[in-house]
Length: 168
Image 1 (cartoon, rainbow, N blue to C red):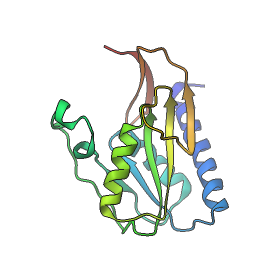
Image 2 (cartoon, helix red, strand yellow):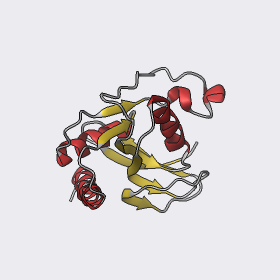
Image 3 (cartoon, one colour):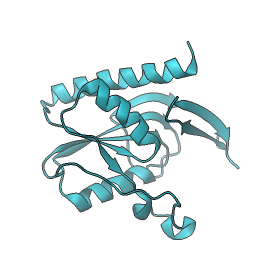
């Protein structure tokens, strides 16, 4: 099995897990939202596999990051796009890699600026240790056991590739 096949298999398993979770909660009209950039790539695949009725939403959390003043403006800031109201809607928030939890915190802050969701389910392709905030994914494709100076990077969108790199 190739790395590409492995990622697609992880995403299919995530879709099965999400479907079961949504059915158990009797959620019929979920809004899936992908976090730019890698989370959106994963969300596009999950959205298609689940056959969700609502169009896929996109978040660019650049202005919501707590390190914005340190790292400055992301040169590729894109507008967020939420095709329907988030008020009282079940949101499936998708990201590529969950590490510290700060990206998810920023994404939830942005979502709440748009309204008050009924619930948020977090799905991530990969999860690793090193959480700085008490955030945990509901659906995880793969858990990574990495050294202190390693990190995981998703590249894509075609094909999707996971790489384990040494931190600079």
